[in-house]
Amino acid sequence: MKFANQGPQQPQININQTSKLKCDCGYGLFEISFSIRKASALITGNGQDAIIPLQLFTCKKCGEVLKDTIPPELKHIEDL
Ligand SMILES: [Zn+2]
Image (cartoon, rainbow, N blue to C red; front, side, top):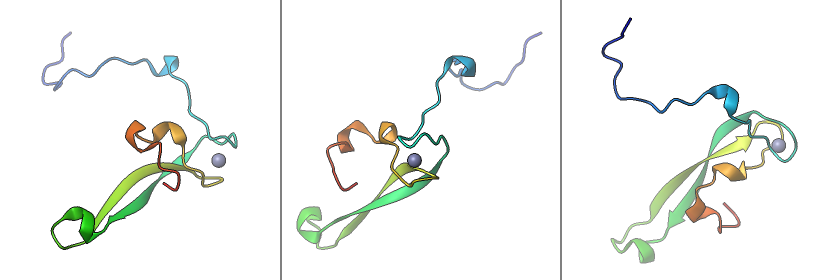
């Protein structure tokens, strides 16, 4: 039997072959948090400050940012 209208093909990943990310504290549930960066008018060049929200995952237990979910280009920022 074939199913039509399944939309674009998703890569088949068997969830049994994945590993669970855990916080350094050992906890394994996270919530979405936003770090908000501000770019001053000097940088934006249009006379107005800009607000740039960055989505991060933080541990629900200890509040630490899950480092594996930080985009590589942001990993150098220490006070993310
Ligand atoms: Zn934690």
